[in-house]
Image 1 (cartoon, rainbow, N blue to C red):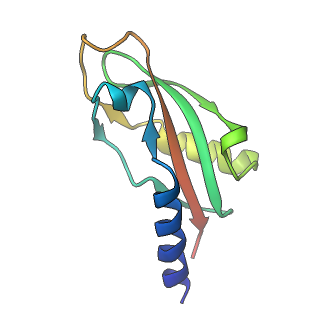
Image 2 (spheres, rainbow, N blue to C red; image 1 turned 180 degrees about the horizontal axis):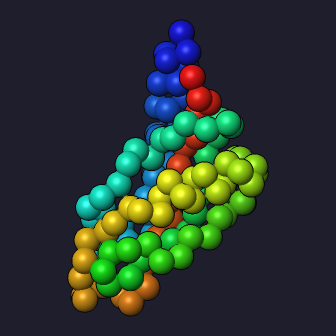
Length: 111
């Protein structure tokens, strides 16, 4: 039953907003190393972060956006920031020096 609720919540959440948006999406820059946009944690909801990506494809800055997030817990925010820290985007010198974008992570309760 718990899994059914998680799947239902995920479907509703994913339909309501894009998980990746901003200049990164408009310019067609692809993720080459990532995990799911859903993670387990101590809360249920979404955490939104503004990111900057360098020419090598590394995420160099992550800023929490509380006005677009439904979770305000600092431990949950830090866990999500660490979760996306190793994600990589396509390398390229044709992209801006610090390419901007937004990532939304859905957090579900640990089973």
